[in-house]
Length: 361
Ligand code: GLY
Image 1 (cartoon, rainbow, N blue to C red):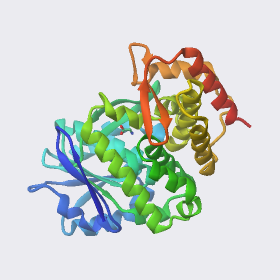
Image 2: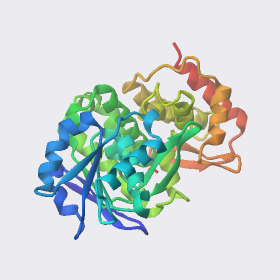
Image 3: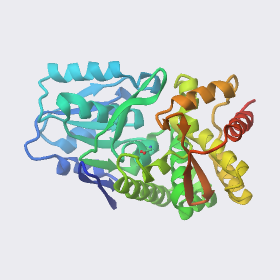
Image 4: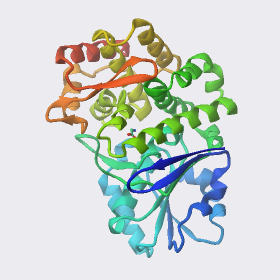
C-alpha cells in the first residue's frame, strides 16, 4: 500500500494506491453525509458497481449514468445529471463518487464543484490514465467544440482510491494510453520511472503486478508533490502539461474522436521533444530515448488529413496560451523539463510538421 498526501489551500487529502482499496470507501465519507450519487458509465458500473455498493454497506447509492466518450464531455450532460440529482432528492449534504476513467472523473468532479455551489467528491479511477493523472489534483471540467477542458474548475476530492487490480479489465489500447501519462511523469521528474518503462516493457505490457504497482505509485507520488507545490498551475504544475499543449490541439482538431487523450499526449510529447532538440536544449541521446519509449508503447492512430496550419490555430486557443504566448514544456534531460514562452514560431512549426509526418501512413 502507498499513500500520498496532497496538500492544497482547499484541503489536504490522500491518494491511496492499494489493491482492493474500494472496500475501504466508507472510511473516507465525511460525518453527516447525505445521499450518495455515483457517476459512472454503464459498462464500468456493471464491472465495479457491486464492489462500490458493498463498500457503502447499508447506505443507498444512486447511480447517474454518463454515456462516455470525449466527444460527450460537454456541459449539457452536466446539466442533465444535476437535474437528475435534484429529482432524486440531492441537497448540500450529498456526495458524489466518481467511478470510471478520466472523462468520468473530470465530469463528476465538475458536477460536484458546481452543484449547489459545491459538494464533496471521492474519486475512484478505473483506467490507468485516470489513476496516474486525471483523478489526482482537482482539475475538473468539460470540453467546448473550440477546445479541450475550456470550462472547468479546481475542486479537490476528499480522497482518490486507486486499485491497480481493476486494470486487468481495461482494453489494451486504453491501458497503453495511460502508459503515455506515466512516460510523461518519468520525462518531467523521474529518470528511474522512465528507465522502468524503457527497460521492462514486456512486464509493463503484461501488467506484472510488481511493475504496475511501482509505476502507478511513483506517478502518483510525483503528481501529489507537484500539485501540493502549485495547485492552480501558476508555476510548477505547468510541467504536468508536457505534451499537452500539442496534444490538446490534436484532440480538438480531430473532434475528440480519433485519438484517446493519452495517445494525443504521446504525439504531443513527440512534438515537444523534437522542438527541444531543434532548439538544442535536449541532448540527441535523450531525444532518441524518449522517441524510442513512445514507439515501444505504440502505435497511435495516424495523423493523415491533419494540417499543420490548423493545429497552430488550435494551439493559440489553448487555455495555456496567454496573451498570444504559447507556453511550451520542453525536456532538457530525462527527468527535467523547463517552461518556455519565447520559442520562435518557425521552430514550433517545424516540430509540428515533422511530428505529423512521423505519424502519417
Ligand atoms: N493533467 C495535468 C494536471 O493535472 O495538471
